[in-house]
Length: 149
Image (tube, rainbow, N blue to C red):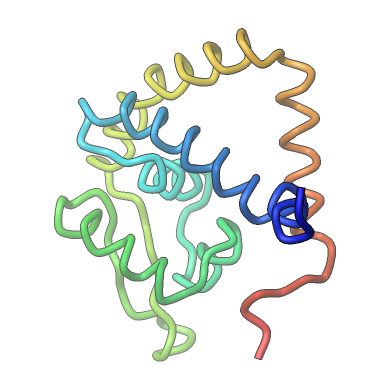
């Protein structure tokens, strides 16, 4: 094996993206009957536990840059699942809130999401899945910031 090939086998980014595409496609397929993608479900899920958030705050919680978050919110707003309004405290900020329709759609999607969770944990193992989530959350706490200026 040459040096380049051995480095490819060690690439954290490639391993993470392969697993992410695989799992993401599985969740997308399960949520498709409800007209949601996995990312949209995650956004609605986060908003369902908070009254409102700024776009930047929501982006931080989901570890997404603000511009990408704003793009992901547009179809949700068009469908009436979220509202986006100028914040009273800071006219530059935009607040996002889940609508009753958004909450209903997220709740309807929840059994589909739970099914994928259960199937994955049944095949991968509940303990390894929990360890994987912990390890991935720990990546966020490393101080490595891809959006740092």
